[in-house]
Image 1 (cartoon, rainbow, N blue to C red):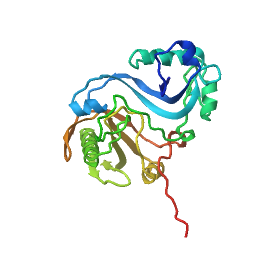
Image 2: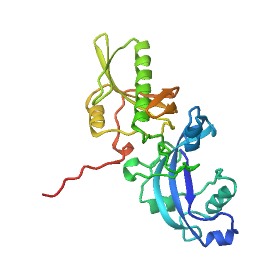
Image 3: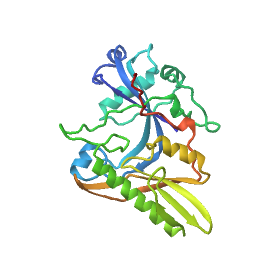
Amino acid sequence: MDFVILGTGVNPRVDLGVWLSDTIDLYVCQAVGIVYEGTAPHWPDETDEQRVKYPTRLGIEPLAKLTNTPLGPAGSLPLAASDAIRRSGLHRGFGKPVQFDPDKLFKLMGVTPKLSYADSAPIIPLNQTRPVQVPTRPKPRRNVKHGTGTGRQSDPRKREAVERHAVDLAIQHYRQAGWTVEEVGKPYDLRLTKAGAERRVEVKGTTGAPTSVELTANEVQHAREFPEVDLFVVSDITVMGITPNFTASGGTTTLLPDWEPADEDLRPTRFEYRIPS
């Protein structure tokens, strides 16, 4: 997995010497999967127009935001990487590949990477990071609510349509495989039975890339305690219509059989607060 570094808050239309004397806000993300062709409207202006305008996509998992980072030698990026961000800004945000040692960047982020196998790019455990909201582009029109860049939906009716479609695809998949399917809902979505065997399924749907999904504490606990649990994810789902009437279709399936979420792949996004008496 490679890394994607996004920069905001500085004008790229300056000479390199001026650029290196400035500071920038950096969003450090891990690339997930490979570049793929999106089939569903995802970005704000795509959902407005109900069509795909930017088909080439890459799933990214935000890891950290580094505020007011120097762009020069005192910063976390080498000269080539710093200049690559500037040149990207001059080219409508198109990425500029750069190879460099990220150790200085990781230290500033406060994380300890691991290698999944020899000669692989380092992977940052999610439990070492905090939730990060990366600004979406193109920017949404004023007073219009949209989902985030990772495909999470702010409109409850749209979210319900996405989740319902994902569950329907999961039911179809397992029935075709010969399972008897029962919808449960909580703390898991489907109960499967076949010839004395039982398997349970957690289903997630998203309009974005299959980078990460939201889980409740009960869903995590159940997946760790029950011996045979699958995670069934449907990504890149197309949603048409306007609130409250949405229709979901399409999508790409990712199936993780015998799923047991590891601590390093979990990141807390909400807390329960006890009010002092």
